[in-house]
Image (cartoon, rainbow, N blue to C red; front, top):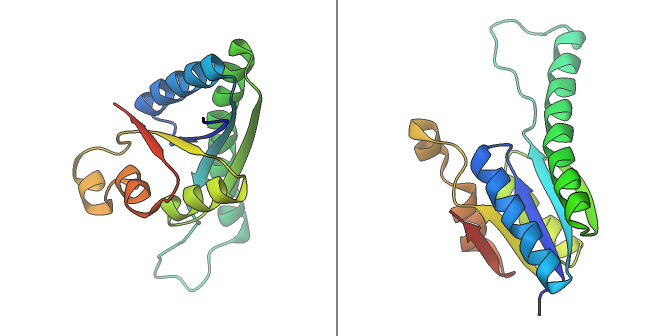
Length: 145
């Protein structure tokens, strides 16, 4: 049976629904959870040769703060449900790879994700991270719609 879930979030409302359901399942079968948020690497494309360091630092702090907020949601839901919870923040331009690597490193036996995060053209062009996890993961994936 499953004993350790990896709950992936992108901060979307659908992701919160998936987290809530993942935590409810974990509680029902006495499993523990680890929440993960993958922050994109900060890249700048400008005509100038160098951006001021404070611009880069401010952007990195904004990404980190958003990730901490998303992970705090997981911690709060797990605490309310009485489920043991750890959280993990990663930085990667390939979230699906970071999610799978974290699940393997933490010895998770189930990955829980929302069916999609980004919508519209951006989601089409970038592809679904959930689809990529489903395609590449050897660990079972529970997709919440």
